[in-house]
Image (cartoon, rainbow over all chains, first blue to last red; front, side, top):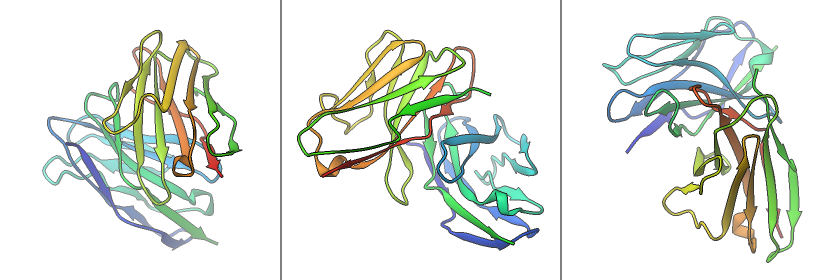
Length: 113
Length: 115
């Protein structure tokens, strides 16, 4: 079956530091890949997505590249802000997001001033 | 963007009682709604998928008689936890997607505590 593995947190960084949150997946076929973010007290929000190999999703300074050869979709940001503190979920979907999502466990990011 | 609400945000109930959680898509028609359960430091676990006007499809291991899901309209789905027990205490999250879209929009979640 499908599975998503992401690095355990919390990840603690100072403001303006570089961020990487690793995500690898196991899936049959060609899944779509997503990063969702959950800010404190709020629901999950779609951060970015990629639907095929070598696609790069980007939003709000975050980016992730769909790497089929390494089955990875690592999230990166060049300079984090305190407001980026949240829990980040990597997820995959079998068919462009129309079908169900399989989530990783989530990685908490804490950014200090 | 698309907004999904859940009500209530928190509920505390006694063991043996039933609790209903509502999930509403506020500005779009949700042809499909999903119900998840989130445990501390764990992934979101999909419980069931419901299409408007149809019976929900439950994931393996989820008791359909215990977790009743209704998706009677394009903007509302409900999850009823029947005869709740302390082990049902959890964070329940719904999501919704519209026809022709490839994105699920999530509600803010409902914290259920069963005493």
